[in-house]
Image (cartoon, rainbow, N blue to C red; front, side):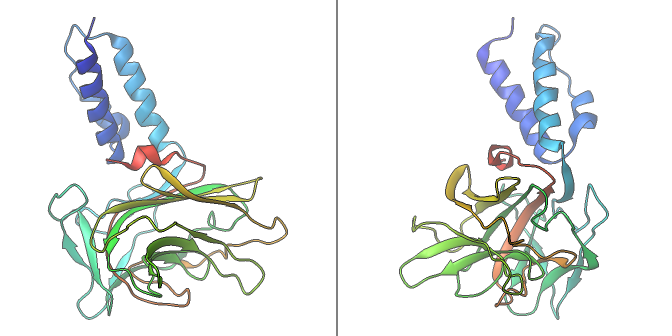
Length: 257
């Protein structure tokens, strides 16, 4: 029988590989020691499979801004444009830095209809940058935005929307000592039919709200943007890594690697 440390190490590796969306291919090429219990492989496959179920867009930003799951590829804009830099695991060319002035990625005419408030979804990304009053980390037109917000009393992280006055969502983290230039994993889940928006920082649920069921808080069909958004602000000096969109609710524990 394998010992506990063997289980822990192999499961950690499989979860880490799964976060790269390598899924079944890499699983099939992992050589477990011959004396390991085959049940471990089944458990590991289940974990990685769970991470990928419902994943409809995935931008790892590892050298380019292509969508590894769907077809919503991102195009660079700006005088200088986004710049490749080290990612949240300190690996080179694994994330993009945006200068907060004139650099962003944009999906062009393509939007994501799942971000409409009429279906459950999960949106997650690793981010670090400069907190300011109105900049946008990433967005989907006027339908959704993440912010690193510099409020009078402290730094806070926010997910919010505007929709022509007919609906709005604003989930805001409490004052918890967030800092400039520190990596944070930010996840928003939208749960229907309960009309509940949950904002997570790392694995911590920092704000959970139920919204008016007679209002649809997200607009649809707008381009996905990184480093810029149209929600009452504009560019934000930020580095972004590992952007995922699911068409279901996914626990943020899977995004910690």
